[in-house]
Length: 458
Image 1 (cartoon, rainbow, N blue to C red):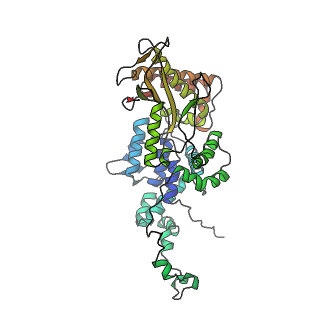
Image 2 (cartoon, one colour):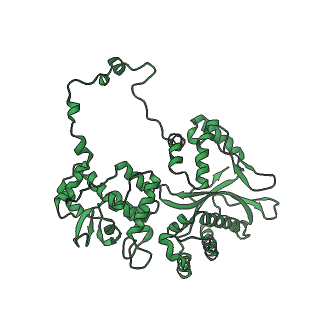
Image 3 (cartoon, one colour):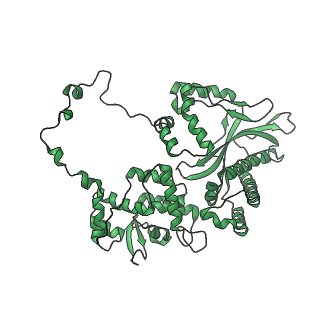
């Protein structure tokens, strides 16, 4: 009885790009990019060491692959840039992708789980695994004209017929064949095109239309109904945002003004308005000018509070609690240092905005604050301004922010407010968790406070 031979399932280039966009942790993204960019098996990718990366020759050495065989495979330049950025952040000592225990590498099951989650968020209906990225590597090389023998060497196949399977799933191999139905000399009536319609476009139509600019609201209009059907259960904040994006733009309400909820309070509400990107240039300029009336005639400073990447996994699985701690610690830091008589001795005004992703689309939770350059004196008798172009010493802010954040984090742990699923399971042990917070508390450069730009005049 012959065993059925199944063809490997592969992803398109667009699906690969979409998958990587939803892998937030740099470490996980690097492993998956090794599977696709170098054709590694998941077991080979997770067991790599820094010495296996030969950046001079742009090669990766795979030791003891399948069949206990060593080989070399290609190193992508884009992948090398990503690996160098990862190295500067993590500084791994043994394995390139260390596990939770010293001397171990990250488990393949963890990467498989990350891959499934990213696939679901990207809307890819195929059952994607890290090994499918290896299949896609071989198939895309064939599509670009790479010799089958060269691909066999890169993949570490002992037999050429194993590699030849990918020729059956390469679209160009099949699409290059002309069906005999298309070789018919006499087309069907419905296939005949009218010369008047094809050669003479209507007067109000242009022969060449500029592509429409992609906008967030347009994406929601086109795919909002399908997304609600596919993912009906989403966090309430996301559901609320999904509901508001399109309707509020249509009715064109004025947005962006911040008003007190009631007299005598500092609580503010933000009224929704059309996004600035949706406005014409004159309307956008007019809107910005009208907002200047809400500003005080003082300097404003931009302050950013960042937490270490070692906490990213914990934050991802405890967003409500950790974001609350991040907001509280950053706000208390500004209020405490500004009120210190040795600094300013004032009650400063500011507002905070959470950014959960960086410009490179990697998960990177941090708080942006816009702070007045000075504030009301503690006796509420006068306005005290900070020195021109200077707000508060960054080192002092960083030290206090680190202490307040870690104290609140340990308090949340003692109250059992945190969850530790999957790869975080070992942090349930108090000794392990406190060891983590103690190590973070000793490092000066992990919790950072920065002033990215100069002060702005209101």
